[in-house]
Amino acid sequence: MSNRPNACPGCQQEQFAYPFTMAFQPIVDLRENRIDAHEALVRGPAGESAAAVLAQLDAQNLYAFDQACRVKAIELAARLKMDNRLNINFLPNAVYQPKACIRQTLSAAARTGFPLDRLTFEFTEGEQISDERHLLSIIEEYRRHGFKIALDDFATGYSGLARLADLRPDIIKLDRALVKDCDTDKMRLSIITSMVALGTDVGIKVVAEGIERSEEVDALRAVGVRFMQGFYFARPLFEGLVGVDTIRWPAG
Image (cartoon, rainbow, N blue to C red; front, side, top):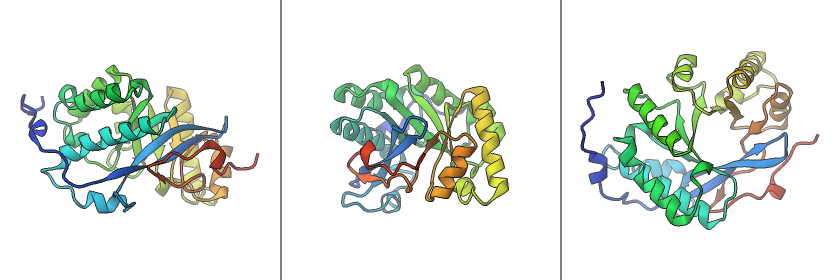
């Protein structure tokens, strides 16, 4: 049993005090040459890196930041008339009570008219989760509202296949650390091939991220990777959406 209190201490925090905004990077579908989703990525108000914003985080403002990111991403996506899926990163350790902590997200979607069933929430495999039952309760609550769940940075964090079996996300995103040089590294490509087969077998979408070279694209396509993300296709666009006609599509 979790020893989390009934009261939600995060809800008592003040708003995140530091200004920030979002850039959006597309996730592409190479089978249909279309944009499948856009991931919202934190940036400073003048385009400063995510690291500059994240440097302002501490235990006292983590919840407020997590909530502000959700709202900002949804508001910007609606303002830009995004008609694809919107991927938002979230921090499970900043969620105290799933039903209470989702209220601002629901309110922002209702206020802007952004459809709930086009939201995907990504959590990173690199975040150590002390209470996995709590994380499962978050996933259950999010799915109740029609959200998809993505496990980001797969192959670099704390879990591996056992955690994948426990959490059963809708999407896994293969990290750049695994994808890099997969065209020349037989071990990496073999692992990716196995993940694609696993995803097909159990109904999990596999996204390869951090792709930078055409050779990586070709190798990934050859083993069945359909969804990709990375600088090869398009860099994140500050407060804007990359158009399908400006994406670098590989030949063939």
